[in-house]
Length: 361
Image (cartoon, helix red, strand yellow):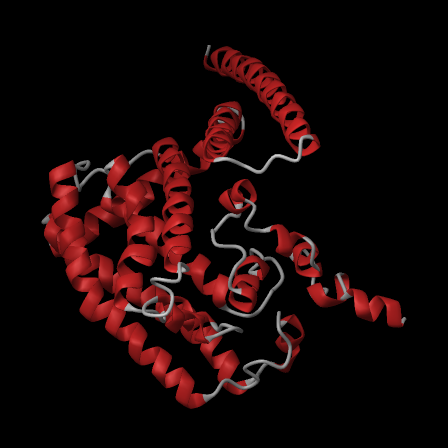
């Protein structure tokens, strides 16, 4: 009986997947047709057309999520279910030691976790920048010859400002976040959420970070705010990992911390889900600022290009940059061809050499 029921679920899942993919293909075809018409008419994007494009991207993502929830997540749920008791047991042990006061987890636990993740992995990158060892990794530099090795005085300045943002700014922000989550309401601390719900929340977190970071970042590049606030972060045209939080405290609050908290607040996430998301966001921004395009890691070419050129590539995923046309220069460069996850050990600059080098050969 269990096997026949499972087979029916699989067939139902495949039918839903097929229907959802047909709807997605129809929507894409309609969008492409309208896009061709707009290009033919040489019309510039308007606010209304941009909003329509945003809605199209969001609806496409939702359709895609619905299509894969009964296929991909079925296999992942089996793993989660097998290990769910293990994670719940570890969580219970932690609560038995710390108690179940949400204040402790949000106000003290969040800064401790995020600082630990930041400096553990950021410290590894910093050792590479200071020692230039192992030398084999230098061939993965996005901007060869920069920070080889990093200037110790500039590095100490960065470390000082990052610690200020994490302690002096981060602790009050953690307290305000706790008050907001207390007002919003969140799941019971003792019970961990299910895999499907964590997956759904992560999708919302990623989407809200893209929206929040893109528009706050664009505002910081306005002539009224750039000189007084955002210029500090752009002192590094060739960034290193720990410069991810090297910025003015106002920028740290409204462009770094707020965008990654938006989805957590909207979804009323469990603190464990929030911790997982914060850790992933920190690892992502460290990689984006690292200056190294390492194998089997997401490409940091997009944000590195932003530091080099200032007026391109404002977002995280690049979705809103494509919609608003703020990645046009980037897409015309070799860096765009390199903007892929390298699934082998060939350095991106060898796999996609500069045009000048190609002509010389």
